[in-house]
Image (cartoon, rainbow, N blue to C red; front, side, top):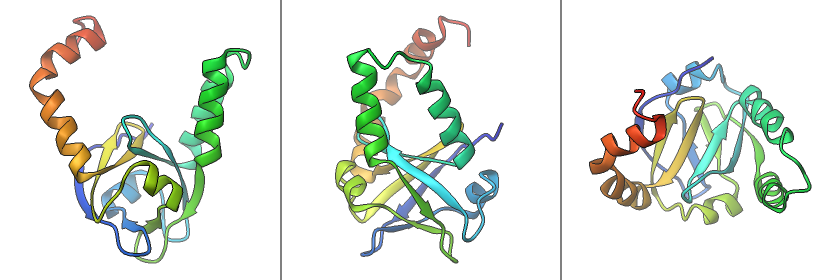
Length: 149
């Protein structure tokens, strides 16, 4: 299993392209001409997955009952906006306009390594998230892991 970590300040150009750092491309085994999936993330971010991780996620989602309204809504909202994009010769991907709008991406963005995927946030939104959550890290960790971390 690949492990993606780190915080990378990036810029989005006028064509909605963002460069993925070489270290992350290597960890994702994504070379020039390779492709990744960009999909809606949580907290108004975007999630970037390798094809393998995107398939794993699809398998997990398929385990939930399609008769549940929340499952149907998630599947519709997630998959209708998810797109496969190619890396160009400079390690950049083009963010689909609908996804850029969903995440309110402006020129300054942050790319995060989050275990098995990347997240792309507007810099403003990420800074606000950190300001709200960072001081509660211990409490969040204890709640998330039942004190077992």
